[in-house]
Length: 226
Image 1: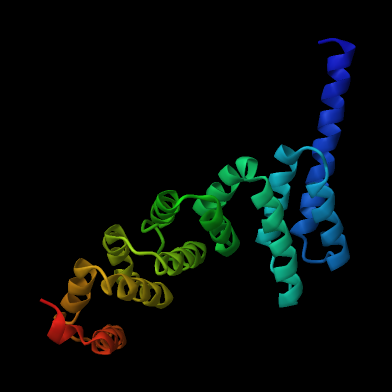
Image 2: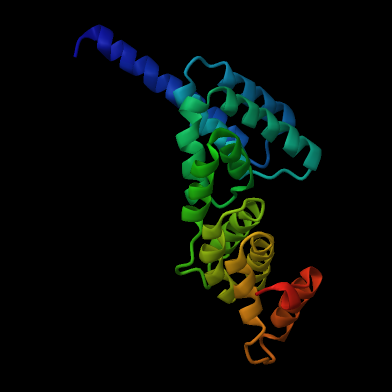
C-alpha cells in the first residue's frame, strides 16, 4: 500500500469514528435535544450516507421523556432515511427483523417497500420460538401483530393463530385483534375464531374466551358464518 492509500484509509477511519460518536449521541439518554438535533443534521450532511445511515438508525433505540421532542427528532430521521432509501432500506428491514424497538422501523418499512415485500417482512419477523420468558420478543411480536392488523391477506390469519396460544396476555390480545381484522374479509380467520368458542371453559382461559365472544357478537358471526 502506498502513502496515498494509507492516508485515504486513515481519513476514512477517522470519519467513521466521527460518525459513530454522533450516533452514540443519538442513543444516549443524558444528551440534550440540541445535541441530538445537531448530530442528526451533521450526519445528514456528512457527505457519506453509507456511514451515516446506521448511526441515524440509533435514534430509534432511544425514547426520551418529552413525547413531542421524541417524535420530532424521529420524524426528521425518518425523513432523511426516506430521502436516501436505496442505502437505508436494508438497514430498516434488518432493524424490523432483529431490534427491540421496532415501531419506527416498521413505519419506515411500510413507506419504503412494496405491499408484498412489506407483508412478507412482517410475517417473517414474527417469532413464535423460545419466547416464553423473553419480554423483548413479546414486545416485538405485539408491534408486528398490530401492524399486520392493518393489512389484509389470508396468510396473516394462518401465521397469527399460534400467538393466540401465547402465555403472554398482551400477545394473545394483539393476536385476537389481528384475527378479528382478518376475519372481516377472510372466512378462514372467522371460522378459526368461532372454533375457539368450542373449547372447554376453565379458570385460565375464561377471560380469553370472553374476549372471543365479544368479537363474535360484535360482528354477528355466529349466525352469519357458514
